[in-house]
Image 1: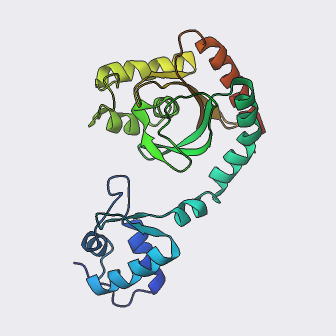
Image 2 (image 1 turned 45 degrees about the horizontal axis):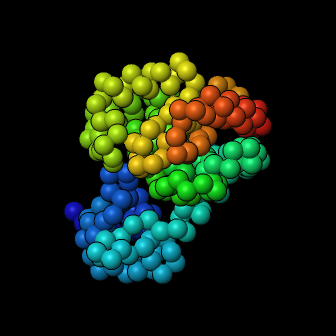
Length: 248
């Protein structure tokens, strides 16, 4: 029952509000926040107002609340994100310099792909991702790499849907998607063809740590892959191998 906050510290109440958000609850009303954090409505209202003022939460136009930029900025200080971003940065820039295409560095966050870094290309290719954004894994190149190498329970959960179609090319058939993920493991790279946005195709490869565990993905977004796929895959693998060797 909401309101069971007697005896709890202010810190525990604030953490309860932040912890109320998860991949299935990215936007919450004040009442939902209070209930999920087990706080009375007046207490939740007061603490949420302070979190909004600081930037930990943002209030959307419809009155719901979402995680704010300040929490994202703080999250980037975590060793896993900091190490990967700093280590991959020179290889990301080399890749951009060699292709002049949009380049992404991403990691898996639960059932989504989280973009840690993006360098925008010089060509007019529609891009929906940005630093800090989260997108479905099944419809993005970097996401498919991460989904292919994710634990089986994650793969099964994503494949069980719902698999929302973002364009007419989005693969929403679980069996077909699973076969594609199996090819990602075999071939060492993933591709998409206008599955997230019309006019944008992508190719991506994994970044591994010293033990061979996939810790991230490096990808390129282009207008078409047919003519340049092998060249882009080769450039991506060189960059990813360099980042993998440089990881502590």
